[in-house]
Image (cartoon, rainbow, N blue to C red):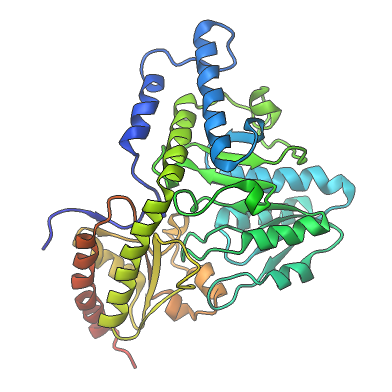
Amino acid sequence: MHNRLIYLDHAATTPLDPRVLEAMLPFLSGTSGNASSIHQVGRAALQALDDAREQVALVLGCQPKEIVFTSGGSESINLALKGVAMALRAQGKNHLISSTIEHHAVLHALDYLVEYEGFRVTLLPVDRNGRVNPADLSTALRPETALVSVMYANNETGVVQPIADLAAICRERGVLFHTDAVQAPGQLPLDVNALGVDLLSLTAHKFYGPQGVGLLYLRRGTPLVPQINGGAQERRRRAGTENIAGIVGLAKALTIAESERTTHASRLRALSERLIDGVLTRIPQSWLNGDRESRLPSIVNLGFACIETESLLLLLDQRGICASSGSACTSGSLEPSHVLLAMGLSPEEANGSIRFSLGKQTTDEQIDIVLDLLPDLVAQLRTVTPCA
């Protein structure tokens, strides 16, 4: 029995990088100013805010004024979807397009726009590998389409979508395009011009930054109705005193993630392949959910026949291994994953699937410990629910 915690839930949240904490500390101790104040302490806070905005813009390949700081991914997504939809409604644009595998921050924001604001929504299907077909987007676009939102990489399966292709279709038709890129930093390129996106959402705690801070990239000229009203912060796009310490941490974490992206992704790819091969070789009636090639190297979603995910997660937790059934935002739900169902899995298959998400501290030794324990745990559960 190993005696150290093995944390394999980095897609839910990542530990704070010590270098990020060091950058934040001056703004967490002593006098931390309000960036809207004109005295010297306020000016120091404003300078830190401006510097962070420039650092983020360098990573995204955009202008600093195109960055809107928020409280996290969910707020950024809600601001993008609701803000653009409401801004374009007066032009007769009352239709939105997304996909069936989006995070609930997207799906529930769309539900709100349908129920309370009268918008219509088309959700694009995905294939068995979890990928959107660009041809389906071309067919779904209408003259009244205001915005398309498709995630860059799925938080449950890690499957990467052809964002540049989808965005190009929208650009040709004069439709704005948003992507939830929350899982991408440190693993995928983030240049907004290469991707061709008009809006992009991120949150710091997915790339070793602090919780409670995120951003929305908003291409210059994109119409947007603010969703939080108050002061003139963030060029009147998002009211509220800026979280200087959090924003400084976000900028530092994003800069590190981009600078280490190639080596980090390569190491994670080797570890995840080791995990996939080990499970599929050692455990009968197991499978990988999602495209094996076009996926984030950090996320491995595996299915096991004749087990219940919750039972397996509890057994793993008792042995010091942290994993999940999918999105942390639905961890209290007994419903099967909407992502896996959309990919064509049965409810039983979806309820027998588990997500391991790897990170900077994950080692070969930890993967081997999981591979040594997992077959016996699955076999133990199958004695309770034997396979037919």
